[in-house]
Length: 170
Image (cartoon, rainbow, N blue to C red; front, side, top):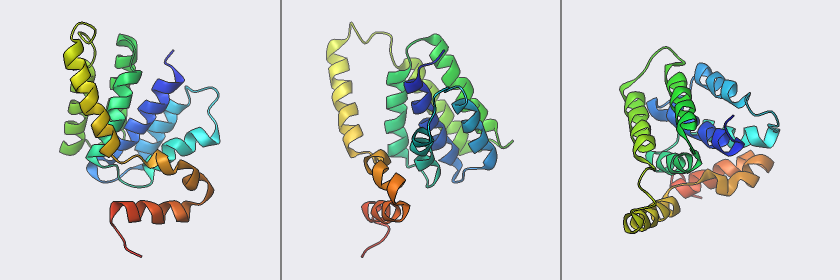
């Protein structure tokens, strides 16, 4: 059985992949819900943590940050197989697979396939990669920083998100 951390992280990546073609369909949302049924103790706050990614498009930088977190959560081949199957299911959920969705799915699959392996013996390279990953994680948007505002006051959250994104000015 996959860990709760893996499933929650996968759920966020699924939401990001669903946005790859510029829209999230009901079928894609239902695909995400099917995956989340595997979490026996899922709460309304857990769903809100995923829903925050469904409401507005996910940028490539934010998607990359989420994929990095997913790569860290994948522990073995069965986790990797679950991730690839779930991502393929969401891409195929609406019956149409766009070029953008194919590209995103291929990129994520490549990251997962190349991810682990020689990390222990290549310390210097790993340190450099971790430093770059940390820098990328610091600069990529992270809507979870405003999660409490999202849960308590969605209007404030939306205004804050638009201000941060430079979409509006007060």
